[in-house]
Length: 115
Image 1: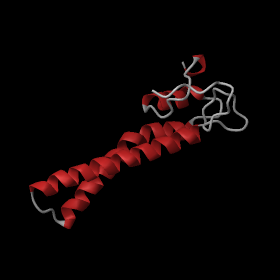
Image 2: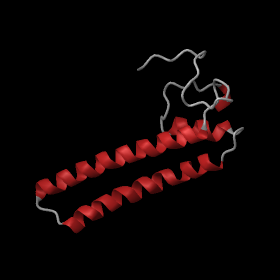
Image 3: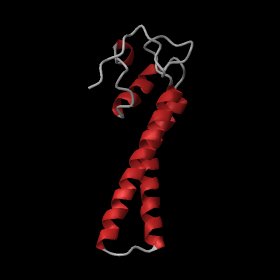
Image 4: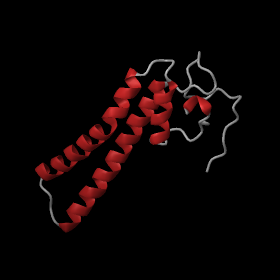
């Protein structure tokens, strides 16, 4: 596990006007989106590879697998993304919950502001 960064450093997930423990909802949304896209690509490629090892796939079958991956990623992240977009600057509970649930920022100390 990476060592925890000192609390005195400005962390990349904070706005300029944020306190050291405040998490920017837009930053968490971007991390969630990137992570889900990365997982989707990896899992779709693995599924296609396994299916192709069993026999030839048509272009339509490949497209179907890719659409399934896209649909699953979208549906799994829709609720947390909407919650982040609706959260106000002062509402850190939602932001912290999403960040914690998806393990988006291990360098963030989750203290009493997030509970």
